Image (cartoon, rainbow, N blue to C red; front, side, top):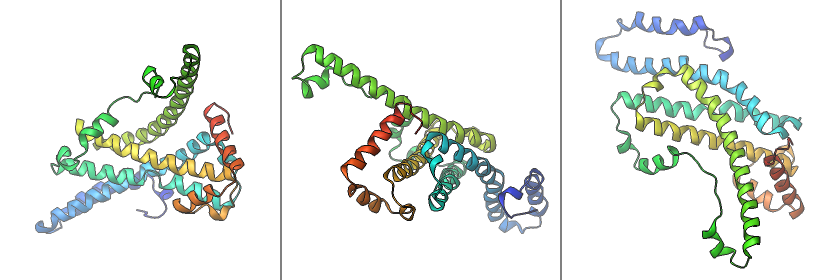
Length: 269
Protein backbone atom coordinates (compact mmCIF):
# COMPACT_ATOMS: atom_id res chain seq x y z
CA UNK A 1 0.00 0.00 0.00
CA UNK A 2 1.46 3.35 -1.03
CA UNK A 3 0.81 6.45 1.08
CA UNK A 4 2.85 8.80 -1.09
CA UNK A 5 1.55 11.26 -3.65
CA UNK A 6 -2.20 11.18 -4.28
CA UNK A 7 -1.61 10.29 -7.92
CA UNK A 8 0.02 7.02 -6.81
CA UNK A 9 -3.14 5.78 -5.09
CA UNK A 10 -5.10 3.35 -7.26
CA UNK A 11 -8.35 1.49 -6.79
CA UNK A 12 -6.64 -1.64 -5.46
CA UNK A 13 -4.98 0.41 -2.71
CA UNK A 14 -8.28 1.97 -1.75
CA UNK A 15 -10.09 -1.37 -1.61
CA UNK A 16 -7.31 -2.81 0.57
CA UNK A 17 -7.95 -0.47 3.49
CA UNK A 18 -11.23 -1.92 4.80
CA UNK A 19 -10.16 -5.60 4.77
CA UNK A 20 -6.99 -4.70 6.66
CA UNK A 21 -9.07 -3.02 9.36
CA UNK A 22 -11.38 -6.02 9.71
CA UNK A 23 -8.43 -8.44 9.78
CA UNK A 24 -6.57 -6.71 12.59
CA UNK A 25 -9.46 -5.31 14.62
CA UNK A 26 -9.91 -8.49 16.67
CA UNK A 27 -6.29 -8.39 17.80
CA UNK A 28 -6.90 -5.09 19.59
CA UNK A 29 -7.74 -5.45 23.32
CA UNK A 30 -11.48 -4.96 23.79
CA UNK A 31 -11.06 -1.92 26.05
CA UNK A 32 -9.23 -0.08 23.26
CA UNK A 33 -11.48 -0.99 20.34
CA UNK A 34 -13.66 2.12 20.57
CA UNK A 35 -10.67 4.41 20.05
CA UNK A 36 -9.46 2.09 17.29
CA UNK A 37 -12.88 2.40 15.62
CA UNK A 38 -12.60 6.21 15.80
CA UNK A 39 -9.20 6.03 14.12
CA UNK A 40 -10.63 3.77 11.44
CA UNK A 41 -13.52 6.18 10.77
CA UNK A 42 -11.06 9.02 10.18
CA UNK A 43 -8.78 6.85 8.06
CA UNK A 44 -11.70 5.53 6.04
CA UNK A 45 -12.93 9.06 5.39
CA UNK A 46 -9.49 10.38 4.42
CA UNK A 47 -8.75 7.43 2.16
CA UNK A 48 -12.13 6.79 0.52
CA UNK A 49 -13.60 10.30 0.49
CA UNK A 50 -11.17 13.16 1.07
CA UNK A 51 -8.35 11.99 -1.21
CA UNK A 52 -10.76 10.84 -3.93
CA UNK A 53 -12.72 14.10 -3.98
CA UNK A 54 -9.68 16.37 -3.84
CA UNK A 55 -7.84 14.38 -6.49
CA UNK A 56 -10.65 15.06 -8.98
CA UNK A 57 -11.74 18.44 -7.68
CA UNK A 58 -8.45 20.34 -8.01
CA UNK A 59 -7.92 19.93 -11.79
CA UNK A 60 -11.64 20.39 -12.48
CA UNK A 61 -11.69 23.53 -10.36
CA UNK A 62 -8.69 24.96 -12.20
CA UNK A 63 -10.57 24.45 -15.46
CA UNK A 64 -13.63 26.21 -14.04
CA UNK A 65 -11.52 29.09 -12.68
CA UNK A 66 -9.93 29.74 -16.06
CA UNK A 67 -13.37 29.56 -17.68
CA UNK A 68 -15.06 31.95 -15.23
CA UNK A 69 -12.07 34.31 -15.01
CA UNK A 70 -10.56 34.45 -18.52
CA UNK A 71 -8.00 37.06 -17.44
CA UNK A 72 -6.19 34.20 -15.66
CA UNK A 73 -5.25 32.92 -19.12
CA UNK A 74 -3.12 36.02 -19.66
CA UNK A 75 -0.91 35.31 -16.65
CA UNK A 76 2.66 34.07 -17.10
CA UNK A 77 4.18 35.32 -13.84
CA UNK A 78 5.32 32.40 -11.65
CA UNK A 79 4.13 33.83 -8.32
CA UNK A 80 0.68 34.65 -9.65
CA UNK A 81 0.35 31.22 -11.27
CA UNK A 82 1.46 29.59 -8.00
CA UNK A 83 -1.17 31.61 -6.16
CA UNK A 84 -3.87 30.42 -8.57
CA UNK A 85 -2.70 26.82 -8.13
CA UNK A 86 -2.92 27.28 -4.36
CA UNK A 87 -6.53 28.46 -4.60
CA UNK A 88 -7.52 25.45 -6.70
CA UNK A 89 -5.66 23.01 -4.43
CA UNK A 90 -7.16 24.24 -1.15
CA UNK A 91 -10.81 24.82 -2.06
CA UNK A 92 -12.80 21.88 -0.76
CA UNK A 93 -10.61 21.12 2.26
CA UNK A 94 -12.67 22.90 4.93
CA UNK A 95 -15.91 21.78 3.28
CA UNK A 96 -14.93 18.12 3.48
CA UNK A 97 -13.78 18.37 7.10
CA UNK A 98 -17.01 20.16 8.07
CA UNK A 99 -19.09 17.50 6.33
CA UNK A 100 -17.16 14.75 8.11
CA UNK A 101 -18.05 16.31 11.46
CA UNK A 102 -21.66 16.71 10.31
CA UNK A 103 -21.93 13.01 9.44
CA UNK A 104 -20.17 11.89 12.60
CA UNK A 105 -22.38 14.23 14.63
CA UNK A 106 -25.44 12.52 13.22
CA UNK A 107 -24.08 9.15 14.35
CA UNK A 108 -23.50 10.61 17.81
CA UNK A 109 -27.06 11.92 18.01
CA UNK A 110 -26.27 15.64 17.69
CA UNK A 111 -29.45 17.74 17.42
CA UNK A 112 -28.82 20.37 14.76
CA UNK A 113 -31.19 22.99 16.13
CA UNK A 114 -29.45 22.84 19.50
CA UNK A 115 -25.96 23.02 18.05
CA UNK A 116 -26.69 25.93 15.70
CA UNK A 117 -28.69 28.75 17.40
CA UNK A 118 -29.02 30.62 14.09
CA UNK A 119 -30.57 27.63 12.34
CA UNK A 120 -34.00 29.20 11.72
CA UNK A 121 -32.49 32.24 10.01
CA UNK A 122 -30.31 29.94 7.89
CA UNK A 123 -33.43 28.09 6.73
CA UNK A 124 -34.82 31.37 5.40
CA UNK A 125 -31.59 32.23 3.61
CA UNK A 126 -30.33 28.85 2.36
CA UNK A 127 -33.52 26.85 1.79
CA UNK A 128 -35.39 29.47 -0.23
CA UNK A 129 -34.76 30.30 -3.89
CA UNK A 130 -32.87 33.52 -4.48
CA UNK A 131 -34.53 36.36 -6.41
CA UNK A 132 -33.06 39.40 -8.16
CA UNK A 133 -33.39 42.76 -6.51
CA UNK A 134 -35.76 45.20 -8.22
CA UNK A 135 -36.83 48.79 -7.81
CA UNK A 136 -40.55 49.56 -7.76
CA UNK A 137 -42.98 52.25 -6.69
CA UNK A 138 -41.83 52.03 -3.08
CA UNK A 139 -38.39 53.20 -4.19
CA UNK A 140 -39.77 55.99 -6.33
CA UNK A 141 -41.44 57.91 -3.57
CA UNK A 142 -38.30 57.76 -1.49
CA UNK A 143 -35.54 58.49 -4.01
CA UNK A 144 -36.95 59.38 -7.42
CA UNK A 145 -39.97 61.58 -6.76
CA UNK A 146 -38.46 64.30 -8.95
CA UNK A 147 -38.86 62.18 -12.11
CA UNK A 148 -41.86 62.37 -14.38
CA UNK A 149 -43.90 59.19 -14.85
CA UNK A 150 -42.29 58.56 -18.23
CA UNK A 151 -38.75 59.17 -16.94
CA UNK A 152 -39.38 56.91 -13.97
CA UNK A 153 -40.67 54.03 -16.09
CA UNK A 154 -37.68 54.21 -18.45
CA UNK A 155 -35.22 54.38 -15.55
CA UNK A 156 -36.97 51.60 -13.58
CA UNK A 157 -37.06 49.18 -16.52
CA UNK A 158 -33.42 49.84 -17.40
CA UNK A 159 -32.20 49.36 -13.82
CA UNK A 160 -34.28 46.21 -13.32
CA UNK A 161 -32.90 44.80 -16.56
CA UNK A 162 -29.32 45.43 -15.42
CA UNK A 163 -29.98 43.91 -12.00
CA UNK A 164 -31.53 40.83 -13.61
CA UNK A 165 -28.53 40.49 -15.90
CA UNK A 166 -26.17 40.67 -12.92
CA UNK A 167 -28.29 38.24 -10.90
CA UNK A 168 -28.32 35.65 -13.70
CA UNK A 169 -24.57 36.05 -14.25
CA UNK A 170 -23.85 35.63 -10.54
CA UNK A 171 -26.21 32.67 -10.07
CA UNK A 172 -24.83 30.83 -13.11
CA UNK A 173 -21.31 31.04 -11.74
CA UNK A 174 -22.44 29.79 -8.33
CA UNK A 175 -24.42 26.96 -9.92
CA UNK A 176 -21.40 25.79 -11.94
CA UNK A 177 -19.26 25.67 -8.79
CA UNK A 178 -21.86 23.88 -6.67
CA UNK A 179 -22.68 21.43 -9.47
CA UNK A 180 -19.00 20.49 -9.77
CA UNK A 181 -18.37 20.12 -6.05
CA UNK A 182 -21.67 18.42 -5.22
CA UNK A 183 -21.26 15.89 -7.99
CA UNK A 184 -17.99 14.68 -6.48
CA UNK A 185 -19.33 14.72 -2.92
CA UNK A 186 -22.31 12.54 -3.82
CA UNK A 187 -20.08 10.26 -5.88
CA UNK A 188 -17.64 9.48 -3.07
CA UNK A 189 -19.33 10.37 0.23
CA UNK A 190 -22.29 8.01 0.25
CA UNK A 191 -23.05 8.68 3.91
CA UNK A 192 -24.35 12.11 2.92
CA UNK A 193 -27.43 10.35 1.55
CA UNK A 194 -28.45 9.60 5.16
CA UNK A 195 -28.66 13.26 6.20
CA UNK A 196 -32.01 14.44 7.49
CA UNK A 197 -33.80 17.67 6.56
CA UNK A 198 -32.06 19.85 9.14
CA UNK A 199 -28.65 18.40 8.30
CA UNK A 200 -29.17 19.18 4.61
CA UNK A 201 -29.62 22.83 5.60
CA UNK A 202 -26.23 22.76 7.33
CA UNK A 203 -24.80 21.01 4.27
CA UNK A 204 -26.09 23.94 2.18
CA UNK A 205 -24.50 26.41 4.60
CA UNK A 206 -21.14 24.66 4.32
CA UNK A 207 -21.24 24.58 0.50
CA UNK A 208 -22.24 28.23 0.33
CA UNK A 209 -19.37 29.17 2.65
CA UNK A 210 -16.93 27.25 0.46
CA UNK A 211 -18.23 29.01 -2.62
CA UNK A 212 -17.78 32.39 -0.92
CA UNK A 213 -14.16 31.48 -0.19
CA UNK A 214 -13.65 30.50 -3.83
CA UNK A 215 -15.41 33.63 -5.06
CA UNK A 216 -13.44 36.06 -2.88
CA UNK A 217 -10.10 34.46 -3.75
CA UNK A 218 -10.79 34.47 -7.49
CA UNK A 219 -12.30 37.96 -7.64
CA UNK A 220 -9.45 39.42 -5.59
CA UNK A 221 -6.92 37.80 -7.94
CA UNK A 222 -8.84 39.06 -10.98
CA UNK A 223 -8.78 42.58 -9.52
CA UNK A 224 -5.08 42.16 -8.68
CA UNK A 225 -4.35 41.45 -12.35
CA UNK A 226 -6.59 44.29 -13.58
CA UNK A 227 -4.77 46.73 -11.29
CA UNK A 228 -1.44 45.84 -12.89
CA UNK A 229 0.29 45.19 -9.58
CA UNK A 230 3.71 43.44 -9.52
CA UNK A 231 3.65 39.73 -8.74
CA UNK A 232 5.45 40.29 -5.43
CA UNK A 233 2.18 41.70 -4.03
CA UNK A 234 0.09 38.64 -4.83
CA UNK A 235 0.27 37.36 -1.25
CA UNK A 236 -0.68 40.64 0.39
CA UNK A 237 -3.11 40.69 3.31
CA UNK A 238 -6.64 42.03 2.99
CA UNK A 239 -5.66 45.28 4.72
CA UNK A 240 -2.66 45.73 2.40
CA UNK A 241 -4.85 44.94 -0.60
CA UNK A 242 -7.43 47.54 0.45
CA UNK A 243 -4.78 50.16 1.15
CA UNK A 244 -3.00 49.57 -2.16
CA UNK A 245 -6.27 49.73 -4.06
CA UNK A 246 -7.27 53.01 -2.43
CA UNK A 247 -3.90 54.49 -3.38
CA UNK A 248 -4.49 53.82 -7.08
CA UNK A 249 -5.46 56.67 -9.37
CA UNK A 250 -9.16 57.17 -10.04
CA UNK A 251 -8.48 56.38 -13.69
CA UNK A 252 -7.19 52.90 -12.87
CA UNK A 253 -10.03 52.20 -10.43
CA UNK A 254 -12.58 53.29 -13.02
CA UNK A 255 -10.91 50.99 -15.53
CA UNK A 256 -11.22 47.97 -13.21
CA UNK A 257 -14.91 48.74 -12.72
CA UNK A 258 -15.40 49.02 -16.47
CA UNK A 259 -13.70 45.66 -17.04
CA UNK A 260 -15.93 43.98 -14.46
CA UNK A 261 -19.10 45.45 -16.01
CA UNK A 262 -18.02 44.27 -19.46
CA UNK A 263 -17.47 40.75 -18.12
CA UNK A 264 -20.93 40.73 -16.56
CA UNK A 265 -22.31 41.83 -19.92
CA UNK A 266 -20.72 38.75 -21.53
CA UNK A 267 -17.32 39.84 -22.82
CA UNK A 268 -14.57 37.25 -22.43
CA UNK A 269 -11.80 39.45 -21.06
